[in-house]
Length: 99
Image 1 (cartoon, rainbow, N blue to C red):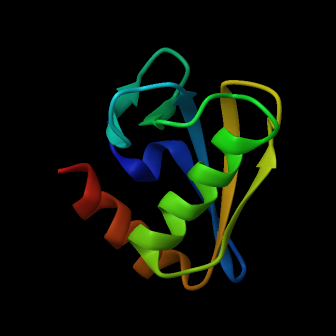
Image 2 (tube, helix red, strand yellow; image 1 turned 90 degrees about the horizontal axis):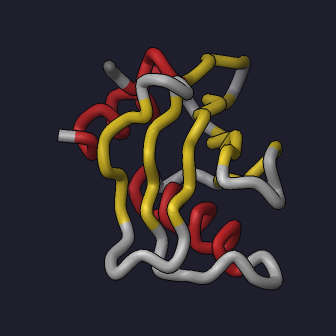
Image 3 (cartoon, rainbow, N blue to C red; image 1 turned 180 degrees about the vertical axis):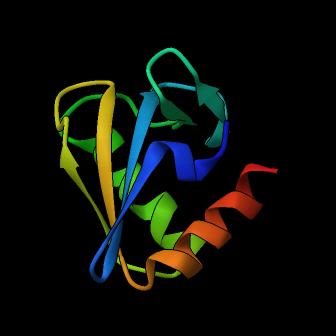
């Protein structure tokens, strides 16, 4: 499975479907959930008061250098993150981060 399989290119952004695992001992992308068709992202923050969502947004901003926001699944483990910028270059950057 690849990042292109769990994302959608839109005009001026890339939408990425992820499965968040909060309260992890380390943060980072860790493969794919093939059954749910989502990338797995581990975060250290607990799912309280939006802390995990903020860590998700800052993680993708750090990796891609582009503004990101959780646009669906605010209270769920299954989320959609929208990353603003050129979708092709964002996709390429995320593919490298998954290796």
